[in-house]
Image 1 (cartoon, rainbow, N blue to C red):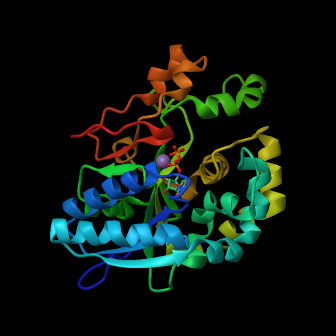
Image 2 (image 1 turned 180 degrees about the horizontal axis):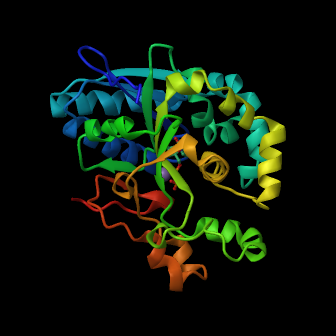
Length: 302
Ligand code: UDP
Ligand code: MN
């Protein structure tokens, strides 16, 4: 692979979205757990890029200040205004929202869930690789080990993501699966299938993304409309719906990361008619390196 990992005084670029803390106050504590576990376990220099709004930025500054002093460790922190980024990526958002948004709302609440798809246009040019995390995650291992995944990216891989650990895409692909009874799309990974991707953790080969005419083309309206039609796909999970389709149409563009790096805890689908198969999807035999307390699920203490 041609990716050069950070070395010397280069930073490991970590991105996170932290917005609307006033209306979503549990998010403060989640973000604190995420940032503290990241810093505590890290053996490398981190540049932390926080996408935020004015009120949330104030909260983040205080929380991060406390974490730096309590851990006695340092990381560089930069803030980006979510409204500005939403404007910069309005083209991508307008293509994606009709297909992958549950309740298309304001331009900005929608944009929040699609920013990762244009990170290469937002991230300063000196960033050649980066990782983005949901704030409802908690590290159990050094982030350096996650960045080592870049070394195993295929020659065309633009992104790295872990599998979705629920049957949500079995559900979303219901019609397609009926028409194609032998398809592996929507089947659990534990039986050799393709359950889709979860976007709580995303690795970006930013240099490749910036130079990819293939990627530029596939985020255009005609291509996205055609893909969703082909698979009768109506999603509601934002960027990860797009990554999931991308993994079906152009699997070489996505490197699959070990499930232990995004150990999702949400059990919502188990109690919605999928109790019989849920265990096949949530199964992840590797060591948990990062917890993801999705759908507001508490994260274990250890
Ligand atoms: N987020 C945010 N403010 C919000 C909602 C979401 O900053 O009001 C960010 C945050 O980083 C969060 C991510 O968007 O982790 C995705 O949302 P969430 O984790 O709640 O979705 P889930 O993983 O449960 O599907
Ligand atoms: Mn999450």
